[in-house]
Image (cartoon, rainbow, N blue to C red; front, side):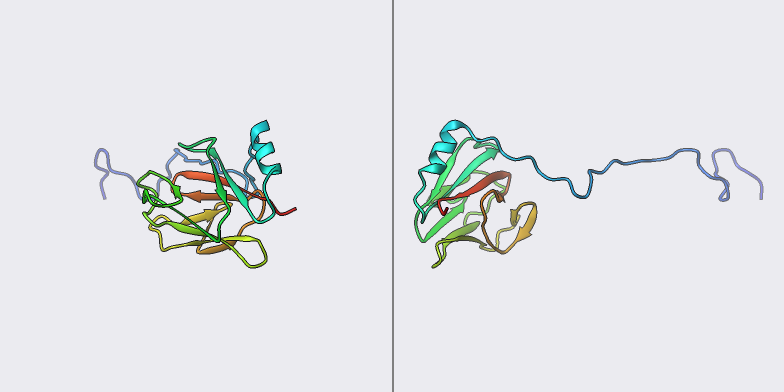
Length: 146
């Protein structure tokens, strides 16, 4: 078969290569930096409450107190934690204080999901330092339990 201009010989190898760079599999997020005011607020938390602090995102520096049995978060202006962005569902999730005083969250079937430490979750028991992502908002969990 005759070679036509611009046609590639099927047996020929390209001298071009493509490479990509991926972060290490065990890459960990950096610890959020707490201001002196944040540290004081966390230290003053009663045992049966918790605090979410936005360290990244459009509401950086905002603090949300979890001091009731249930706290809703979403794009609905009536939510206790109002997150005004299209990446957040109207009724995105609920934070609950359990009988043992620990907190958990439950996604309410949101379109974009809820993430804890970069893993998508439907329900999750929270621990101090957990990063909760709701849409483009990233909040770090701190507990009053000592």
